[in-house]
Length: 288
Image (cartoon, rainbow, N blue to C red; front, top):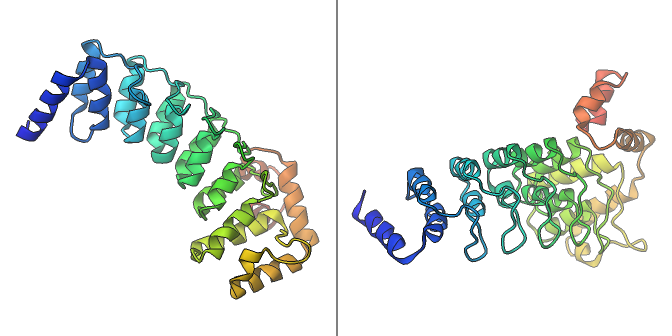
């Protein structure tokens, strides 16, 4: 052990109780081996003791250490316990690491747990564009159209960041694109707000096109005019005006209705069962 690590360990051992040492050791998990965590637990550290706003399991998920997460759960950590912000460990894991997410789910974590703002782990996975976490949560029963305190869905959270990969996964699991929050904002309008700020790239453009295909048609205009913030960017405004002015065709609107009729499920599997030519199946699945 290096002299600096020895000094840190001595400081922890002299100043804090066993349970306090446990969470501080986990927080510095990149410096300390997992044997130190196991040793503290064996000596009586409480794996469910709250220190500040966090419990050890939350802390392990924050640093995305899957081995430590599994160790704590094996030692009796409460998988659905809330921290000081009413967040579960799964909320933190969903932002960081799919391995941690899968371990938590195996131990019975609630994929639809709500934090203090009614955010689910799926909201955070979508916002951070952890597409594999999004998929793992949805496969374990997460509500794809769950709403937060503002009635925003995970699709809206993904769209506001232009997170193409997460948007694709959510749409594959039947996320509804024609939804609005309490302020009247849709996933498309949340993405447009990003583009208006000049933060768009080819990825965000592809995200807009994907959402447009999923909706069949979308409307951003209010009383016939574009929102004021959109008019500041003439090129973007002209593009959106063309999209809004073009009515949905029977084909595109039928695709939206067919997808909706299949319900909230993994659509690639559902579409596979339809008596349609392969080209139409791909069309329903937004492959163009």
